Length: 100
Image 1 (spheres, rainbow, N blue to C red):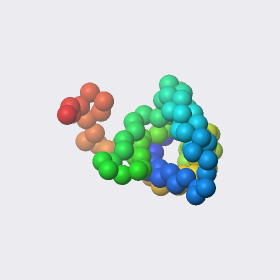
Image 2 (tube, rainbow, N blue to C red; image 1 turned 180 degrees about the vertical axis):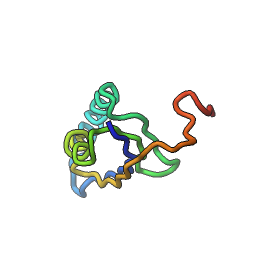
Image 3 (spheres, rainbow, N blue to C red; image 1 turned 45 degrees about the vertical axis):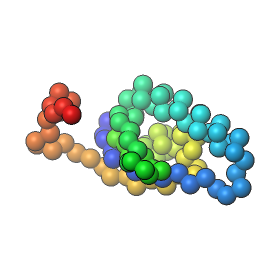
């Protein structure tokens, strides 16, 4: 699978019932865990003080990412996505490299 850096911004349409928003957010958490277990969601961050997410996602290609991965998120209809395909850097320390 290929890796992608994805910036997601969710904008709830005005007038949406708060119960629907709450349910979709709850369903979103469940779906994110499923996608992580399947190896599609690698890491996910929220920039401090901002209402957007930045994550590393995996899929066969960008079309697969949009349709079969991100497109399955309950909040997807309310999201905009900025997708950047990633490739390995020769100096990448890998998963056992640097620690914070």
